Length: 358
Image (cartoon, rainbow, N blue to C red):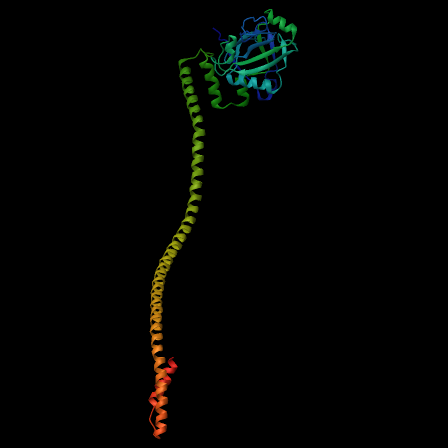
């Protein structure tokens, strides 16, 4: 029994501008999923309020991993093609990037105007995606589009049920043929081969081949784990290097600040000793000041006492002076009258001394 070939289609780097050249409205969509549309007739959707024809249709443009039957006229054989999630996402991005949202055809033949892609998105959650509002149940990674139909003839064919879905137009290449041209890495070969096996696209295989495939699957998983660990390892290694540099720089700075700290500590001790010495000097000066002040106050009181006593003594001395001067004068006169000489030298000296003290 001949096995039908299954080919994964990818986008060539050199043909990115032509990846999705246009979207075609067809009677029999290759992805086997019909679009939904709505206007005032409501058709297969219910809206709370519709005042005019919106002429909008919603449809998947590409469904990932879905096999599509194709015929090769060169070999007169049928084969299946499919697109991975990554290719579908890339195709949707390139479609808008190269301004192809206004390009549309009818049955992959005639270009038509008045058909514009107004929305484009990738389903990220098959249950919560808004495509479910239109009755779709599609896998994660599906490329959804919303088209505005201003072409009356096309819109009429849509409403009449003649046109049922969308089909893409673009340029893709066989993934394995492309890998052979570009010398793929072992990892790329393993990933591509295992994708086909997991999806059941390769079924006829010997036990030894299945065993080898299990090993390649293990290698792929471990390679993925290793790849996931590399950023964390790199991050931590880089962080350690930064920390080590910080430690070196910090150590040098710490040594400098240690010297500054020791100098400041030494200065503090010197100032503290100077403060203690100054405090001792202050205490001594204060003590001596108070002692001197006390002595001065005592002397001042003594002077006051002696002045009082001196005043009293001077009063007595003044009287004594007057009496002594009077008596000496009388004695000198009497001696003169008698013609005798009476010695009065001691009395005169004492009188003169007394006078000098007064």
